[in-house]
Image 1 (cartoon, helix red, strand yellow):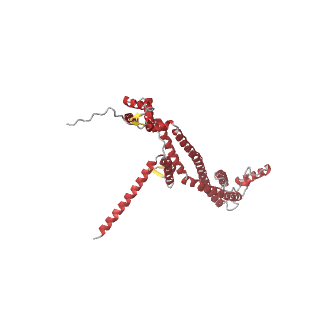
Image 2 (cartoon, rainbow, N blue to C red):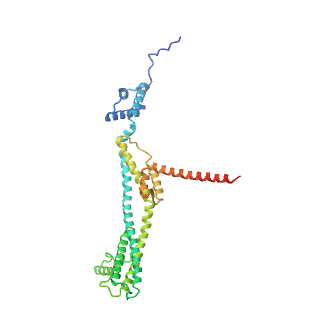
Image 3 (cartoon, rainbow, N blue to C red):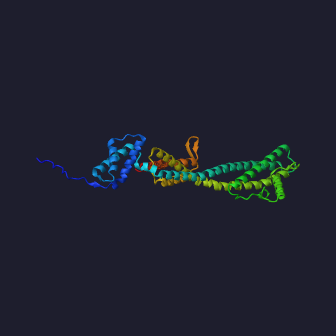
Length: 375
């Protein structure tokens, strides 16, 4: 019967250069220190293995020291997950601060573009709606006055006080259109020519001439005082002025619609989607910093790219219905699509599956009909 050969006393374990395990030792020390800071108890063998490796770092390691260190690191990673040595180092070496600053810069740049334009879009939309309503009102009054005042003599059954009231409303509506058109023209850098530009305050440097022009503008936009007996002349003059004001107002509204509506439809959803992604990244960054699980990621650019594509796709739709009687604007959907890119792609996948099922069902029905028609 053979016996195992006894181990020779002169066998020496292979020496290992500690420099090869420098990163491993530092990772273990970071994890061990973090565990001590937050009060997580680590077994003595793990602590001894790390301390032994550090004390023997200058003199050299053997295979046993390296094996004990790797085993200790494995136990620390398992005990402290999801915190890792990489996330701890990222939180202390300035990478987290750089990432936070980058997110804030992106958010501020987007906000600087989105907020003023959204405000301007809201204001121009409100003013444009008011101009359109005033034009409709003024058109009806112009037709009514033309019908009531075909001659200097009022037709039978037409009360002069009613006509005067209608003229006052007509003149006030004209002034409203003119004032709002001038305000709206500022938002497109005065691209539309003002028919009364030479009469506006501030156009003429000479004080006397400016006063005369202001008086002439007042005579054009307001009723004469006192009113003459022949109201048909007053009506004809107001209608002539209204035609110029209406053309001015409609031209401004059309130009504003082209510039602001195109931007709001094509560009603004993309910016809102990018803002949604930025908010998501800032929120995730804050949570990871708090839990010490932050790791620098190279996927941020790709997430912004996907969010931009999602925002562009959302811009193709005019409205989104959530349930009966409730709808969400495309800008809100674009923000949500940027914030939750995964949900947006799940929606697209579900949409594609619906189309595929409909196509397969149609194909099956066609095949069944063909088979049923053959003997």
